[in-house]
Length: 181
Image 1: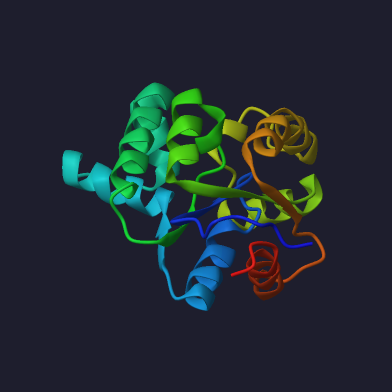
Image 2: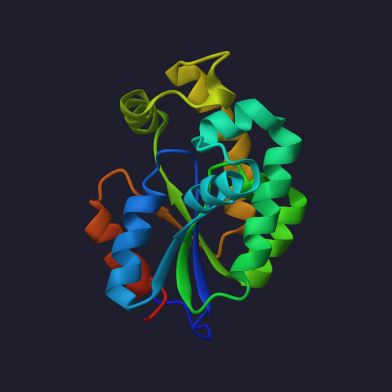
């Protein structure tokens, strides 16, 4: 069933790390003829500009700590308010912080891309285990965090899409159909 809503300025993809937000977001942006922004890439660029250190988000998080990382993330979200209509892929932890939730709500319409712990963990192993999982880098660790985060994702998202049986192209098409775009 399609959702009746005004066309949102920004379509925001949220979900756990490695659930397909970036790949799907690029495809969706192309499908809708919109700009695409990945908040992790924007954080890395901004950190490079501020510190002259070219680090990945994982290493920025380790280097400056969570509070400073989240402040930088909030600055990026504030800057996106001035962008043209776009598709935005967020980091997995972005929506967990109340100030970011408010910024995200003001930016546009959120879509939660869901995945199983097994699929997410397999993808993580290929990309590298994120800093927040280093103390328990197992499927059980992913499952426990996913259970905690799921409540937030479901609460703030307008739509949830199970990505387990879908390709990124199918997910992008499903989002377009659900939003009647």
